[in-house]
Image (cartoon, rainbow over all chains, first blue to last red):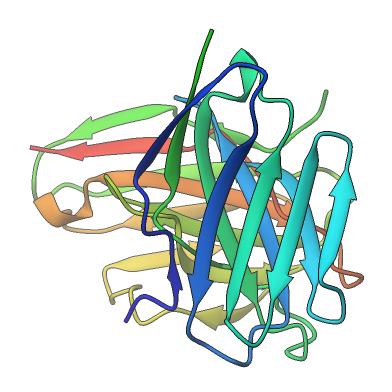
Length: 115
Length: 114
């Protein structure tokens, strides 16, 4: 049962354009969402997060949008840079389970920025 | 930079052998997590500790797997009688209690069972 889904295994975007990565979830109990970025041979690195009480969170070139009714979130990167080429994981957890930020991850989207 | 450190980075073992991995979390972090990642999948939760107490174990963690965090600092993950299906990247992460503190991951231990 894949509770967090990233249906696009890969995405290619021209440098300077906007990258949009999508994520869907099925567990309505999830109330906190994160994006992680992973380079080869490294562990995932935290990028940005959003609580379910918000519908948007922005940090520099990165913006995460949350649509609770659709159980959908997206990560926008603008402008895209070559260093953004990596695998991006969407993750979620139930904040109400205070004491265990046990993340459920999606399968990842490999983003390639074309110079 | 004293991030999460994992040792070894790579381990090749024969089926049936026991292996042990070590994780050193960020020093002030009191939570420590183990995840497993297989090819084409995202990391899957295995178990977590708050200080030295192991508070939750996933169904993925069979009886052949055991994790410890004896003094609330470093942790070990042991796999007994390894099977080919155990081949994966084993990731350790740490965090501070509460306030949506994000997990900080190590670079993982890649296990190959032949």
